[in-house]
Length: 144
Image: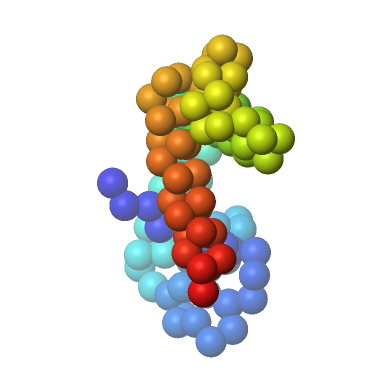
């Protein structure tokens, strides 16, 4: 599905006459341009005057809004879960680095973080691989 969004509240300067007329129509302003706009205005009036059709449209708009809100809420919750998980990984990384900076071996530091059960063993392995890459770069720079 393709959505086209038209902001009818801004200046239509430089736009075609059809687009200017459409913006006016969207703002409930009368438009006298061609038969298409005459037809649209007649249909809008008919719909607004027919309680049954108006109710169907309002119900449809309500359902659309509810779907958008549900999708937004689901996206927010998914983002929060991801953020919490990333925060745990970041915390584990800091703890691991602190352990190494305090003279622990990589094995000792890894075991310490593992016992905290902050992140999965799989995520801990990824973290160790990244730290190993950083250590190798650091060692190479020190040799230069």
